[in-house]
Length: 204
Image (cartoon, rainbow, N blue to C red; front, side, top):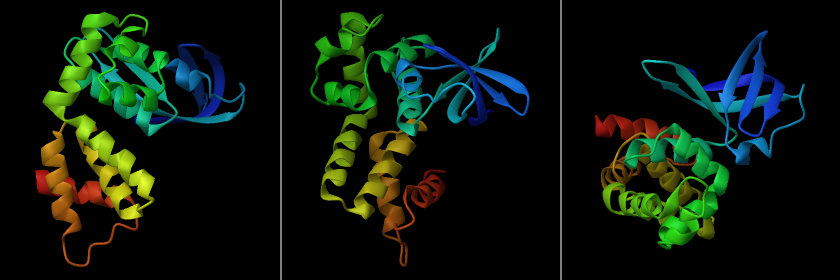
């Protein structure tokens, strides 16, 4: 499994980038939101990746932020009928914060305007992310936590979102995080990474 690429940007097109890692060129499919923020060719770049494996091929997808990669995986894993091509189209058609706001507000019209999505898929995205996964509650909590500038709450919210991206439901992810931070002597000052590791032990 390839988790990230770090090297020189050899070439970039709107939907693809080639990264030279020690003399080996890795081709990654990217959304437009990543393409727009890439450096000039020849500069160093780090792409977070999703390694998609099928019987026919191995494909890399690259992103400049965890939020983009997490949403890409969430759409593929938790919304029926959405594969990597459609998930990439969603990211290309709308920045992550705008997508989250649209789902929270049930704005299927905005989602349907994304190329290749349409009304039925937009309705399915909202329905399944809200009712089946419960990710919207976590997004709202994360937004509220950032508004209070409380590092503890921000770390907890980020941990819940990361666990949802790994395939857990919002309720069980939130419960595990709450159990972790209640442990005697536990501190959240080091960020969400430690909470995630401990929460995964709780969920096993």
